Structure formats: structure tokens, C-alpha cells
Length: 545
Ligand code: VG1
Ligand code: CO
Image 1: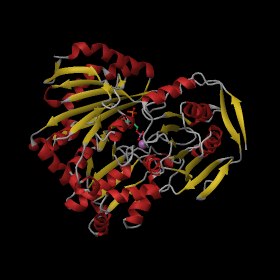
Image 2: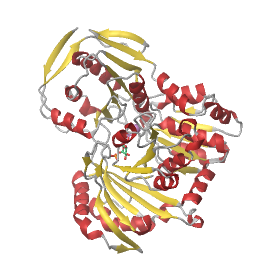
Image 3: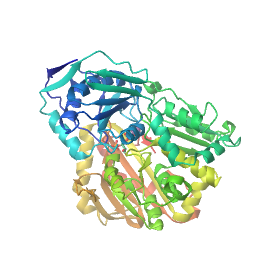
Image 4: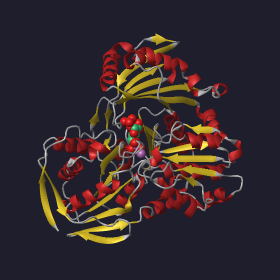
């Protein structure tokens, strides 16, 4: 093998967002684009020589090409070994599990998660550290800075590696181990939950489950764990073969993109009692009962409230954490348990320090991300197994569990409205105007609601003291209601405005009111405060979750 140095010039816009760098495949496949970014990651590391790197992705279009490029570059960068998932596959939580179990130096995950895939759609890349979690902002800022000054990248001259067979091979001195992408992860999950009891539930004729892998990475994981280790009937996992374009859909488990699953659970003839889905890279989850969707913010709260039912967590929770826009349902559970509830900016990277320091055991985001200290990523199948474990012990339908939770804690009625593909200039204007208005919002009244305080969320990490500013505009209303406005950091086209709406309803006789009806005064207030339709020209959101 010979190492070659290739001169290059910087590409603009290689700034990682909420979760790595995401761009269109057409952008990523330009000569040098991927190479530049990978070299900038390697240039920002120190002490990696001779160490192990974990590499894999969600199998989307360009995954295979990118993996070969990164293998050649890893050899040139001096890594001692790369653990790569068979056929280039590793779900995000499985990559985290492998990094931790194999004590790797770090990992590269190729995914644009819930974004669509294919030659005209999205690709992404992110770096995870030795704790198995996404690199922090200090690291991603350093990578971005480097992308603006790069002059050369290093690669090695060597043929493509056969990734279809488990086993070892080499590029020069670097060992490449093609690994089973499921084994370490499945073993970890089996150590956390009561598999015997869950298997018993899945064997009951009156309990029928469907897991929709959305043609994405969790197909093989779902099959191996649910149908393999837990004995669920064959066919429990649907859309279980990862496809490079996810069958043309958005691999995003929400009521719009997972509509097929939702309607199957609403159809009494289907006989289904429990439905679940996960996203492109397997870190998000959706939980559906018979004709009933569990809101992700409720899901993390219910998981926390039922921690005693799951073996690995029964001894107690150190604390819990949620991203700022996630509903405060989790805070209510934490208060009753007498533990801390941390509020972080959006994105799993902010939970890493809390998990490492033992301050939080469970974490959750409103965007269908739920997880724990077992890895350092959110984990779709983990959430599904947690629910199955709860159902196996409580023997009640999903809806009843949620309604009982509301009766006990009150209901944090919650919804997120997404306006997708807005012109960037208009989105920026909306946010800038809101920021300017912040000091004058307190006291403003509309529809019987009154603003108590408003700010731009700023987070100081309680472990390392780092500060992250401008993480979302919060408008706090009386009686625990709130509106949050922020722009997405994962899109690749225009801007996506996210409006998060929350209202606390204690009275159980009002819990049955449909979510959007209960939030109507807030939805109207959000329009008054942010002038969404006036500035963007949009009169209704594209996705309501
Ligand atoms: C979105 C979600 C956020 C999540 C992130 C990555 O970010 O809101 O909660 O952590 O996606 O999830 P944004 O910036 O678009 O709002 V994944 O499953 O796409 O890696
Ligand atoms: Co994801």
C-alpha cells in the first residue's frame, strides 16, 4: 500500500448541524467533498494512531462508496484497526454500543437519519467519540474551522474491500474487521430487559405486534431481536430490508410518514394491539397502541415513571434529561421521584456529559428520540423493548397506560408544527424579528393567555461549564403553557421552522379533548407573536406531530 497526498481546496458550508454534516448526495459525491470533511475530522483528533475506529451507516445511497473511501483514508491516517459493519451497515445505537464494548477510539456513522435517501436525496456523516456519543460542539467547531483551510487530504492506494463477508482483511498495516452489525447490540439489549417475560407476551395469541422498519436500517435488528431472540411470529417486522432509497419514503416515524402503521393499528380487523417504528438510522421510535399514538414527550415520561418494571433500571434512576422543546411531562415524574430533570438544547450530543457523569439515566426528545445510559445515542429498539417490558408486566393496553399516567400526573398536551422548505431569508427574518421582540413580550395577552417570560434558550453544561447560545426562542405563558420557536439544523433544503406548543391540563375530565383543539388558543397566539403566515406565506404546517 502506498499513501498518497491529494491537494484540495475548501468547500463552503461544511458546518455540522444538530447531528453531523447533512447534504444532498449530489453535493457529497463531488470529487473531494467527502474526502475533505473526513480529513478535517482526522486532523481534529489526536492520539488515534494505532487505535480502533468503528465505521458503518444506515445503508442509504452512497453508503457503500463512502465506506470504501473512509477505509482508505483511515489507513493513511494511521488507525490500527477499523471495525466495519457487514455490508457497511450499523445502526446509530449499534455503532455506539460497538464503540463502547470494543473500547474503540471513536466512530464514523454515515447517515442522514430521518431524511429521505437516493441519488437526489440526502447523505450525512458524523463523528462519535470514545464514549460512543456524538462529538461535542467544541470538536465540531474545530472540524468546521479546518474545512475552511484544508489544502490536502491523505488516502491510500488499495482496492475496494469485500464487506459482504464477516472476517479480517488489511489495508497496509491497518486491520479491517468486518463484523456482525447486530451481535454486540442485541447482547446489550438482552442484558437490560426481561426477555423471558417479553417473549411470553409476544407468544400470547391475543397480543399482536407490528414493527415497521420503514425500509431502513432497523430491519435486520428488529428481525434478529424481536423475531429471533424473542420469538415474535415471522412477519412481525415489516419493510425489514434496508433499501438505499428507503422505498422512496421518508424514513421518519411520525403520524404522516408512518401513516400505514397508524392506520393498521386503527383498523380493528388487523387484530394488532401494539405497533412501533423506527427511522433511517434506527435511533428514533414511534409507539402506537390500538387506535392511539403515544406522543414522544409522554413516552419518555411514562418510561421514567415505570422504571421499576425493567430489570436494568429497577434499582433507581440517577436523574433524567430532556431537550428544551420536549414537553415538561418528564419534569413532573422527576419531581415525584425526587430526582433532577435536566433541560438541554436540541440534539443528543448535549446528553453525553450528563450520562458520562452519572447525572442522568434516561433521556428523551420530543422528536421521537428516547434512550438511556446503556449507550450514548438515542435508541429506537431500546424504546420499543422498554414499552414491551412495561406491557408484559402491566398487562394493560397502551392507551390505558397513557391515560392512567395523565390521571396521576396531569396531561402536558403537546404538539410540534413543522413548516418545511421555507426560503432561508424568510425564516431568518422571522426568527430575527422574534428575537428583537423578546424584551417586550412579557405581559402580552391574547385568547385569555398571558406571557410570563420570553427568552432565547442558553445552556450551560453542568459538567464542563461550556455554553451554547441561541438554542430556541421560548415564550412562557401562565399556568405552565409554552411556545417554542426554532429552525431545524438537520435539513438540506431551505429552512424548516419548528413551532412547539404545550399546555398543561390537570383536570382528567378534559384529557379526552383532541390535542389540536386543546392547543387552539396557543396555535393562534403563536401566529400573532411570530407572524408565521405573513412572513413565510404558509397558512398551515406541513407536518404536525
Ligand atoms: C432534529 C430533532 C432533534 C434530533 C435531531 C437528530 O433536529 O428535532 O431532536 O436530535 O433531529 O435526530 P432539528 O435540528 O432538525 O430540529 V436524527 O434521528 O435525524 O439523527
Ligand atoms: Co435518526
